[in-house]
Amino acid sequence: MFNWYVILLAVSGAIMLALAVVQQGQSSTSRTINGIFGAGYLCYAFYLAFLFDGDSYLVFFQAFIVPVVVVVNFFRNRTPKPKLTDTQKAWREHQRTQQ
Image 1: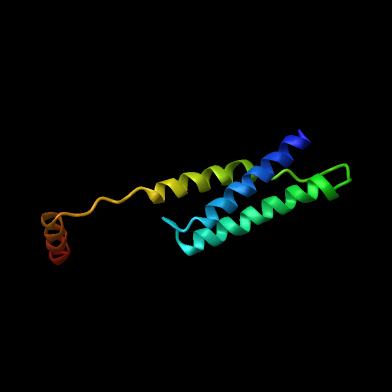
Image 2: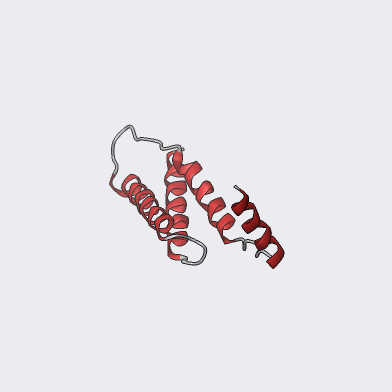
């Protein structure tokens, strides 16, 4: 269990750092957050793998949830939003003036 947890932490951190590098489709805030969490995951995995010699360690269940949410959010933001036609733009403007 311990080895799998360390491997999952390292893989999750690497994925999050890779997503932080990609500029297309992300805000700078989400890229920064991905970088911070990715670095944190990798550092904790390194600590557990090479420096840790105790009997107990913390298992962060976010290590299994956060990377999935980040990847889903990344691909959701990359899908192009449909462009409005002139008629749709006029209708939205009409709706705004009526309120």
